[in-house]
Amino acid sequence: MTVNELTLVPQDVLNLDGLLSPEELLLRGTVRDFVNERIRPNIATWYEDAHFPLELVPELGKLGVLGMHLKGYGCPGRSAVEYGLAAMELEAGDSGLRTFISVQGSLAMSAIHKWGSEEQKNEHLPAMARGEKIGCFGLTEPTAGSDPSSMATFAEPDGDGGWVINGAKRWIGLASVAQIAIIWANTQEGVRGFIVPTDTPGFVATPIGSKLSMRASIQCDIRLDTVRLPATALLPGARGLSGPFACLNEARYGIIWGAMGAARDSYETALEYSKERLQFGKPLAGYQLTQEKLVNMLLEIQKGTLLALHTGRLKDAGALEPVHVSVGKLNNVREAIDICREARTILGGNGITLDYSPLRHANNLESVRTYEGTDEVHTLILGQHITGISAFRQG
Ligand SMILES: Cc1cc2nc3c(=O)[nH]c(=O)nc-3n(C[C@H](O)[C@H](O)[C@H](O)COP(=O)(O)OP(=O)(O)OC[C@H]3O[C@@H](n4cnc5c(N)ncnc54)[C@H](O)[C@@H]3O)c2cc1C
Image (cartoon, rainbow, N blue to C red; front, side, top):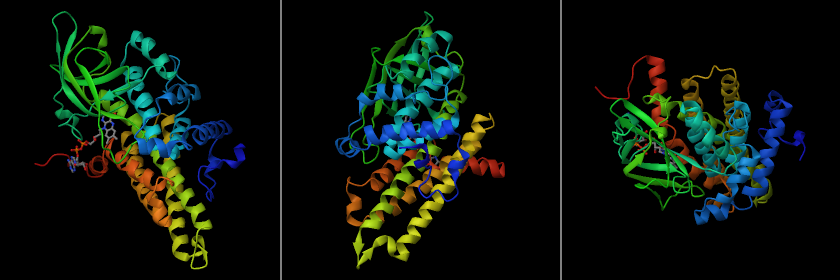
């Protein structure tokens, strides 16, 4: 495939590709090829079997998408736009695979990169960038989701300079296959972050079963029963909830792009199908009702992709604010779910099978709209920004 054949959006009527540099186009093409070769042929089976392809992790390291926009310590050091383009291509394959690079790169690695000591960075980041070590990020708890300030997990000094952690985490991506967990816990001086080797006695991660979404990916319950850690486990730079929130912002940024990848793949699938499927004597694509659906999808994909690119350019210029990320995450995930569902209708009955991607993408996006700040949380962030009044708590 040549660079010229690759477009951000099929029938890129706005010529958004004209806004990308040759290097950005090349990177996108490389990740797209990887998705076509390594993910697309297998994803339906992985999804049906609820299987996360662990064997792809070192390959993703070689591809250069783990900790992709982090600099130094063996990380690829690519731009925010390049990271976004990679997220978009991976999520066109499956949200579960994009989620993996988000958890590894934007959450676990970025926590160490932002808040870790030199020793911690040198010990973990190069191996994580190569995909030889997997990290997870434990913030959410069984009783603390949208409101992480209510977290109950507690870390106490052990009297010898070390720490003892007790508590529970829920929905933690990759925890059962990770070698290290970034665990956020309350202490007497507020929330702190810890690098916990997952083979530490008292740390138990159990995959959550029976999921209807993100089936080609792993999320776990974690129990922390008297987990003893040395002083060197503490992330020295993170104090308070701004520590985990800074990492969440990185992952939320990737989602702005990724969601449009899932939407694009659904649109392309529906477009192709509608041109081949004959009903009432002609292709579905020849009916005005179908064309209206396709046009509406294309408009939202182009707008959402433009929004993603705008936030990426802002990020590369050092001007991206959390409120920009809320605009992008809320809008693009919401629109992407609608696009995937509309695409499914064009596929008729065949659309409810795993032979076609739109319903799989739509189901995955139910998770994406829930994690990294729900629709409601981002609406409240933007509502506060507009009015100056916080509506997070009543009274
Ligand atoms: C697939 C998946 C992967 C995940 N991966 C991770 C991970 O790796 N690490 C991690 O720490 N967490 C992870 N999470 C957890 C995720 O961040 C939480 O699910 C999310 O923050 C929402 O929390 P909750 O599920 O407890 O829902 P709740 O907070 O209980 O919310 C339930 C509903 O109430 C709404 N609500 C809450 N507060 C308000 C309010 N003030 N006003 C109006 N409505 C409100 C919410 O928007 C939502 O619709 C993951 C979740 C999923 C599903």
